[in-house]
Amino acid sequence: MDLKDKVAVVTGAARGIGRAIAVALARRGATVAACDVALGENADETVRLCREAGGEGRAFALDVSQPARVTEVMGAVAAAFGHLDILVNNAGIAIDGLLLRTKDEDWGKVLDVNLSGVFFCCRAAARHLLKAKDGGRIVNVTSVVGEQGNPGQVSYAASKAGIIGLTKTLARELAGRSLCVNAVSPGFIDTVMTAEHVQGKAREELLAKIPLGRIGAPEDIANAVAFLCSPEASYITGQVLRVNGGMLM
Ligand code: NAI
Image 1 (cartoon, rainbow, N blue to C red):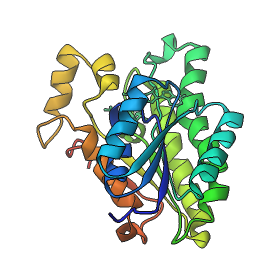
Image 2 (cartoon, rainbow, N blue to C red):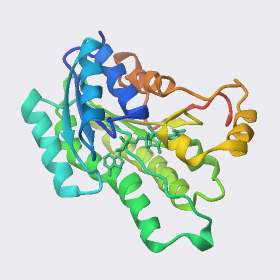
Image 3 (tube, rainbow, N blue to C red):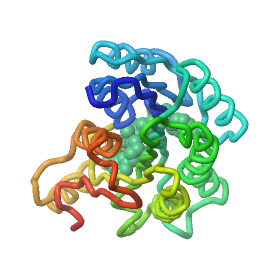
Image 4 (cartoon, protein in one colour):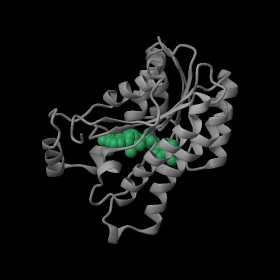
């Protein structure tokens, strides 16, 4: 229980990778604020799984693209649990389209959630994380697509590449205050997002590019995030940890 007495905010925690991260942190003893734009059965299930795993959990309604609400929720979490030690920026969306077909509106939506949302959460959480005992942690979820590009995902790739620059900058800015900032870069992970966006032949072709020969599970990402939040990772900052079955080395 190496995260006992730690309080963590996980965004996009109602399903998929975010839920797996919430549960992985709870299993290590953390109290998890499971934040999602859509509360309801899914978020409740995340909270239930966190408790079953041995940690504590509570759901918070949070649209990461709304800066005033982000500030409110970070304050509410710190007030409810006494402190805030870990922020995992996992919430993300994809609206696919080739360059010439990408509408201004869709470009804006993806950047607002995936990149501005990470910025808003980091800025609002930082004032609390800087007071964390033994140093705070931020882990941002980027993507293999942000590192190598992907036709048809111009907004998504740009937002995920932006997260890497943001992560390295904050790592440099906050290192002097013992706040470690890293990114995890998933490859192809089995969630609703991939089920919606990668189907049929495209799925087979992607699978063929993964040396380990399987699609990743949300828990593969969650374990990497939990490691970066652990005391054992206290000398790691500004890094992008790839968890992709070898599809990008
Ligand atoms: P998902 O679509 O299954 O879950 C995303 C969660 O984020 C949902 O619960 C959704 O309600 C929430 N969310 C969406 N907009 C939000 C907002 N504005 N504020 C708060 N919460 C919001 O997605 P999945 O697959 O679990 O992905 C999680 C993260 O991992 C995303 O950032 C995604 O870009 C990234 N990723 C996923 C990969 C995959 O293969 N599934 C690969 C690489 C990165």
